Image (tube, rainbow, N blue to C red; front, side):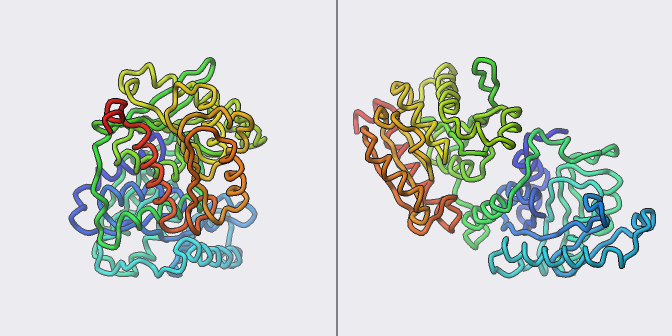
Length: 447
């Protein structure tokens, strides 16, 4: 079994766990990658989401080789059989254990931001990771969680080594695994996209889950049901991967141009896209670079600032939507972030007949240069009040735009809009702008 990404794995795993929805479970993700899977599980089950921090203990001099793990709550697990095979004594790893325990404490403070550990006593607790190979980190985590007195402890993973999973079954009340492979070699081989999850993304997912939970284990009412399509956009000699989501009765289509060093999996753009879909707008998130280009760009950082190239990709994707029966009748808008905002504005300037609206989030419109004066599509620039350098650039760009325009400043927000409620405000502003400017022409005329 191969998953598109951790989000896809989480959605499939949630379906296998659906019978637990009425048990008021709490979902604990193991940072970092496990949280991206756990987010989808928690969302589908209407359950609160939190983390349980655990760190691998590596062999001295070969710390990529896991000898065990340290989990929050003070639990330390060491694989003594492996240590004996390697000739490693407990005292040889004592300093490593202490260092990882200190790192666990630091990460707990960073990821929980002063909040207490989740109340797990008497609860159904579902522990989620993105995969299990040797199982050291998972074992330390579930032993620490077990000490908290859960009513039932469930281990849920998309993929795992079959032998490791068998050794973990006595530690929990239930195991849910979509693919227990007796020949598992590396977890990443079961994902098309197994890119590293950052602390920033974990914080973003936790905040989104808390906003959705609202303290009552109830998620916001769903909007129109969306149909999702994986898409491949062919432009000359490159193929760009994306995801198209079309809600019932869609009134417009928003194409996302992500920022520098990001991809279609950007958690912030995905959050905004979900909000727009609830408002009845179709969304297209796609990669501006091929996987080979992304690999080269991670080294050079050059392509992410080639806004002319990125604008060509944005415009090519936009024109491709005009030929598809599912989207060709929908008016189109661009949502650009960071350098993607410049690409969106350049695309809007070059083909004013294609896009009917533009929104830039924390964008770099200054990189669009002389193209700004040729943008006629209604443009909304959204910037955080604490993102002072980018705010100044947006104020200058605002004066150069000649079409209908607005500059919205989100109070107390920084560049990534990670403050509580900041990204919600971005989604609200963008939704109002696109709903207004992408309305079907007959409806717009009658209004």
